[in-house]
Structure formats: C-alpha cells, structure tokens
Length: 490
Ligand SMILES: Nc1nc2c(ncn2[C@@H]2O[C@H](COP(=O)(O)OP(=O)(O)OP(=O)(O)O)[C@@H](O)[C@H]2O)c(=O)[nH]1
Ligand SMILES: [Mg+2]
Image 1 (cartoon, helix red, strand yellow):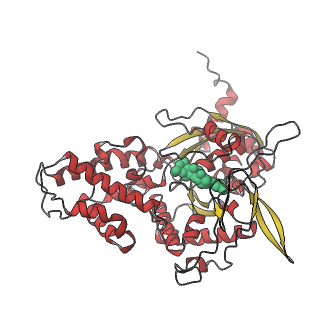
Image 2 (cartoon, rainbow, N blue to C red):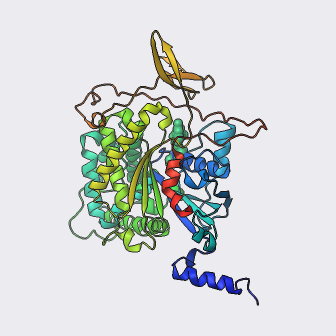
Image 3 (spheres, rainbow, N blue to C red):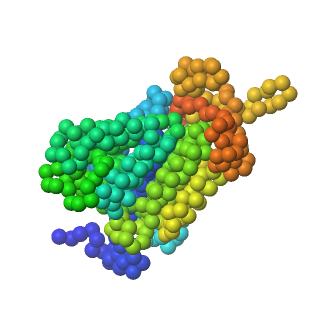
C-alpha cells in the first residue's frame, strides 16, 4: 500500500530529521508541562487562564511567538493518556467567565492537551518542522510529591519521625488526640481492622488540622491522607504510624505487622506508580505557591513554605540514588516557581513580591542542593481580578486596587455583599526583602502583618463592539508562558 510518506522529499526530510535528532517528534512534537503546588495554590485557575488566553489570542506581549504573530491557532485535542481524568477546562471557564466564581477545588490528577500551530521564526526550522506543538498539561497535587522521601524510609523510620514531629510545640495541640490514641495501643496486639481504621482516621484528622490551621503549617506525608484521589478508604490508606514499636521483627498477625504491610503497599501501589507514570515523563514544571497567604501569616509561615518548596524541588533533582531520576526517561530542564494572586497588590509591589519569591526559591535551591534545571521565579496573577486607580485623601493621592470583594470578606468592620465594586488600599510590601523573613523584625509574630489582602471575585470580561468577550486579564502570565514553552516555538 502506498503510504503518503513515500515521496522522495518526505524521506529526505525524515533522514534530515533523524540526523538532527528530531525524528521522534516529527508528527506531533509534544511537551509535558507539570503544574503543581499545595492545595489552593492556584493550579486550576492557572491552567484555565493559560489555555483560555492561547485559544482566544489574549494579550501576551512577553510571549514572543504570540507577539510576533507566529501562532496560527491553538486548540484542544484528545489527550494521549486514556487512564487519566481530563482537566475539566470548559467547566472551569464557565465558572470563571459566566458565573464569575472561582472554580471548585480539584483533588486529584488531571490532564489536558493543547495543540499550537505556529510558524517557526527561523527559515531552517520552517522548512523541516511541522510547526505544531502539543502541550500536555498535567495538574497534580503538590502533596503527592512530598511522599517521595517515604520511599527511602522503613515503617519504623516513618513512625519515629511522625511521632517526633507531632510532639513539636507548633503541632502538639493539633496532634493531641492522635497521640493519646496511639499511645494507648499495643503494636504487638492482634491485628484489628477497627483499630487500624481509628488510628488512620485520627492521624488523617491531625494532618488535615495542620493544613487548616491559620499558622499554615507545611504538609506532612502521607500525601494521600490529605488528597486521597480515588483511594479513599482503601487498605493502602488505612494505616498510621505506631508508637512503642518493638525492635525485633513484628509477630505475624500483629497490628504492627499489618500496619507495616500496608505502609509498604502504599509505597508500592501508590507512590511509585505516581512518580513512574507521571513525574518522570515531565519536560517542564511550574510550582505555584500561595506567597500572599504566607506573607499574611508571618515569618514562620514563610519559613514553612520555603521548606515545602525545598522538598518539592528535591523531587526533581537529578542524580544517582534518587528513585525518580533513576527512572527519568526525559529530564525536566526548566522549573518556574511562581507566586500567583499578585493582583491582590498594587503593581508597585509586584517586583517586591517577585524578590520575595526569588529569595525563597534561591534558598530552597541551595538547601535541596539542586542543579540540573534552570529555576526561575515569577510574581503573577493567572486571572487578574482587580484594576488599579487612585483615590484622593486630603492632599494625598493614594494608589488603590478596584474589584468586587467576595461575599463575606471584611475590611475595617465593613462586610462585602459580593456584588458591589470597591476601591481598596492594599498596603505595600516592604522594600527590603529581609524584613518579611525576619521573625524578630517589625513583622515578627507579635506584630500585625504589613498586608491584609482581600479576595475578589473573578473580573467581568470586557466585550468588543461586536459583542465578543475578550480573553481573561492576567498579570505576567505571558512571561511565565515564554519561560515554560516559548523556546519550543522558536
Ligand atoms: N486573585 C486571584 N486569585 C486566585 C488566582 N488563582 C487562584 N486564586 C484563588 O485561589 C483559589 C484556589 O485556586 P485554584 O486554582 O482552585 O487552586 P488549586 O491549586 O487548583 O487548588 P486545589 O484544586 O484545591 O488543589 C481560588 O479559588 C481563588 O480564590 C489568581 O490568579 N488571582
Ligand atoms: Mg485545582
């Protein structure tokens, strides 16, 4: 059968492509972009805004391919992985654009394929490349990444560490109920499903309380206790650390033996496949952080955020002995650490926010002993929910941000109804980055934080004269795009 590829020119192209190492991607060059961050960091909003802006030709002056008019079109295609839930782009956009509400929390992994048809900037590439790039965007909870260290730990190590961390002053009150229960249980007693369940539930409740606590404590493993995905209630999730473990091998049929087995099952059936099937196939990664919330909560929360970013970056560190990188078939070569929600600040503070993220990421890179990928930082807003303006107060002109605060938000005793547009003076970030990290500084734990941000509803989209609604406004989303995929459209 004659295939369409048998013409001389096509063969010549393939030969050339093989020579230049591009054959694998001739028909559908693809790039896998991981989007992660702890819960509520802004993953869903980021992906929705990114796709919406590309499909609708949004204003993206710092995204070179778009700015120079080389993007012919961008559209959604069927994703390559049938077993992964699809990212529900249409639902999220309907929420943002039609209802002007933020999309629902998503608690598991999902994926979306966005294909971009473009004209290459270089004549040589134009001749030989298909001018088509498929970006497979994978949204997954950062909590799951933090499970990686478990792979190197026995059940006894895991238990000792968990008990130690739970007893620390910051956590001791939150972990009290679990510690009481665990200390009343004899690991050598006969295995009992109800005891296992009570322990697991109590331990999970403690981890959730850490997350909800206003001190914004970092996440502790196992990650699926917070974000179970579709594993809720399964035996691989019905375990917990134990106290008073015996040094010897646990008696078979004992509670300890049962917990150990389940802990190992969690590693084998949950943690390893997740890394193997998803993380090791990524090319690029964006790590979203909620720096605004941490800034609001003070230096201790920032230190904690830094610890979480350090642990997340360690997962992408190439090198011997790292389970993940031993498996790497491709390698992540660019990582962007981005604080989204910068629209809650006036633009004069955007560079300051970026400097804070820079310092946080630099320290995380140093602590994780990270090398092997370019790490950049950004202060951005995937969806900009505010405009800027000025307000005259006496002789002073104050910069303000204008938007519709979410129903129930309060400032100075005023509670908003979710319908009225309001101008707010958001406060400034300090000029000196160090100030926000210094526990003894003016923003130390005892004093008030410099900013108290208000959350706004998603913006009302402007319409053109023809009634077509424009794409979602953003802050520096184009810069993020340029770093994450720009070079693949060169
Ligand atoms: N102003 C503003 N708020 C944002 C932005 N992105 C996220 N938010 C806020 O942060 C919340 C969480 O955003 P999501 O995108 O749902 O976060 P997520 O990381 O997907 O959260 P989970 O699905 O729960 O893990 C939203 O409900 C918004 O209130 C942004 O670009 N600007
Ligand atoms: Mg989400």
